[in-house]
Length: 249
Ligand code: G3P
Ligand code: MG
Image 1 (cartoon, helix red, strand yellow):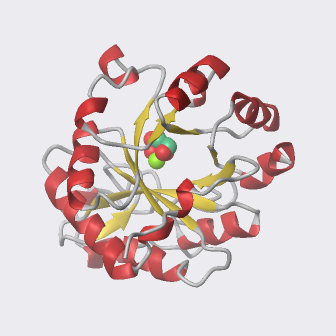
Image 2: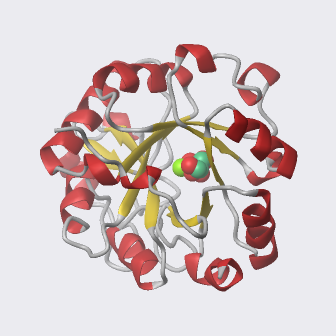
């Protein structure tokens, strides 16, 4: 049966998506941050994933654990057992993608997941395959959107899981070939994820005319959220869903 994806549903306001969860209010990319996002009125969360040394998909932004935990070292050099011992703040641990999917599985309304796959030439194939496996295993394809700064990752995801929509990430400080998404024809996708510095009414109109949806990041000020909404974006990724919610009606 075809998957009807909730990211593609018509809405009367932009989706509110917690960036790394409600990361302004809880340790980023933890179960507490995702639960807090929900409590603060988010429709879903963005989370960053990569592979650890023992092959599991773990939810963490950086290449190393140094900034977000009490440990040191590269994620890809540490086993899941070693990562589990680390303190991510407020009693939180680094979760696996499987845990996040299970934790949010029964939330009503369904809680949207924007899974951002971190770029890595060495891990691209294995990460894409492992993330797709986790989504099918967890039964969350209908509430999942993949995104990546790496167009070749997006291309691989399109091959592995064409049913799950994909977004290409870029920001205003990137080189022109990435900022203007020149590789787009090679990476089938439905969403563009420009940073807020690239969002204008004209740009959103241009992308919509190409049939794309637009989610922007990272928007924490209510007036900036109102601006993004006025530009016509479909989703706003914020460290503080609670702060921007009132500005969106
Ligand atoms: O997905 C939006 C945003 O998270 C992309 O940048 O570095 O925060 O993962 P980063
Ligand atoms: Mg991210």
